[in-house]
Amino acid sequence: MSLFRKLKRLFCIGRHRSTVPTGFLPLSEVRSAVIYTDPDEIGVEPLKLRLKDFFGSRGIELKLISPHDKDIRTSSDLFIALNARPCIDERYAASSSTARFKMGRHQLRRGVYDCIVTDQEDAQAPVSSVFDMIVNLLTSIQ
Image 1: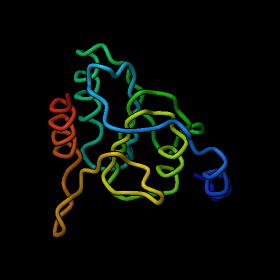
Image 2 (image 1 turned 120 degrees about the vertical axis):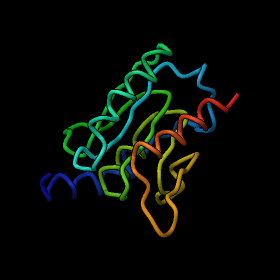
Image 3 (image 1 turned 90 degrees about the horizontal axis):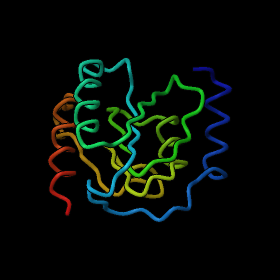
Image 4 (image 1 turned 30 degrees about the vertical axis):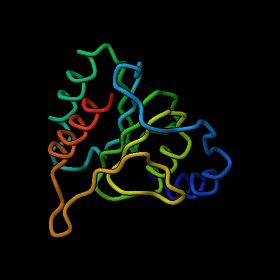
């Protein structure tokens, strides 16, 4: 990704910030989901099939986005960021998303996420185990 695009997203975060109120949302009310992943992270490719199976079996439209996409502003009911390290692209995608429920692996400035699944302090969890924890949380919300 070009430095120009990163700087542009940094300056546009405030201007494109979503004003949609967010909070916990039961999986039964979710009609569309956006998953933000880093395709260079180990274990992401096999996870994509699991994501499609999980959301597809519930009739939820799924869109996968990554830092390499040109337009990462999205509109959905659920936004989940699965990348291990925060970056400007994730911050822009999460802040500008009109999702009513946002989940991530680390909190961003201004408390963007409603729910956080963190790694243990001494080790970074694989993306598949993080998704397992998110599935448990999503299915337990009533």
